[in-house]
Image (cartoon, rainbow, N blue to C red):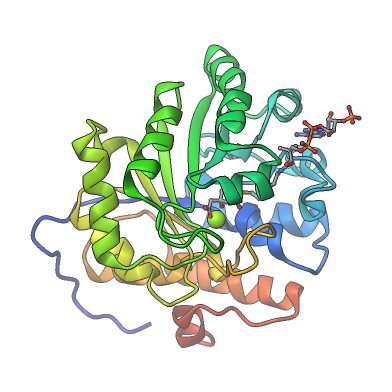
Amino acid sequence: MLDITAIREVGLPAEVTIYEVGPRDGLQNESATVPVEVKAEFIGRLAAAGLTTIEATSFVHPKWVPQLADAAELVEALERVPGIRYPVLVPNERGLDRALEAGITDVAVFASATEAFAQRNLNRTVAESLAMFMPVVSRAREAGLGVRGYLSMCFGDPWEGTVPIEQVVSVGRALLEMGCTELSLGDTIGVATPGRVVAVLDGFAAAGTSVGNLAVHFHDTYGQALSNTLTALREGVTVVDASTGGLGGCPYAESATGNLATEDLVWMLNGLDISTGVDLQSLVDTSIWMAGKLGKPSPSRVVQALSGS
Ligand code: HMG
Ligand code: MG
């Protein structure tokens, strides 16, 4: 790998936490059925590469996301490394019960800033979905679990177009107020551009939300995920979601493609002298291995550039 001296940009953090979503956001959208042992090995390799938060799977309705129907089996098969968090998605109390039975310590609920996507993804209005999450979040907090709140369609929606920033802020704050300790702002279909990222983050700041409670979750449909991430870092965000190999998408938003590839993010952060604790070549090797299992190459430019190096 080429060794070019890193230069930190003034104002950027010394450290960024990568919240890896490949095994969940990545694999929920794959048409190929991935055997549970392959998923467990994928997660093991990600941990060995230095990732410390690895979203493992979802305890959603198995008919809604058949790719992750093996959630309990997967958690059982995982060799959990002390100090690493393995969060899972839970939409409702049934999901939380299943996660608790599996011995999970971190969960995430997932709301939508728009009515169209709330209906398609959760079969509920926005208000009904918040009511569904309320007992999940309070029970999870009482049980001592970490609870993240996702908010989808923060920067644009395939059915509703522009999403008013007040609407995004209002649903996001409702998630924080019910007890989520972190709010991940989702660009589910990858349409965000930097000016809108600043505007949404400013909207939260103006409403009194600390940037320390925010994470960003960019899909890379239009190739904007890295520039949006850099913009968010300049605004003070230090938790960034990414998916190894750039896998990802949402089965209930057809225009969603892969997430920001973790390798693309790590290349940029390494160049900026921002530490992540992640070994880039190990991630690339993992993506090449996973691409072999999925039968298609990784869309990540960094994986392509470093293949065979
Ligand atoms: P529903 O059909 O309205 O469910 O779906 P219900 O509450 O009416 O229950 C119907 C039956 O399902 C009941 O069984 C429940 O027990 C069962 P019955 O009594 O009829 O025998 N059930 C469950 N079984 C197992 N596990 C569960 C569960 N829940 C209910 N958790 C529901 C409502 C929320 C369940 C459904 O809409 C669902 O599972 N949606 C999940 C969709 C999803 O996973 N989407 C992808 C993740 S979100 C995403 O990718 C975006 C993100 O990456 C951020 C971004 O990019 O923006 C996070
Ligand atoms: Mg996503």
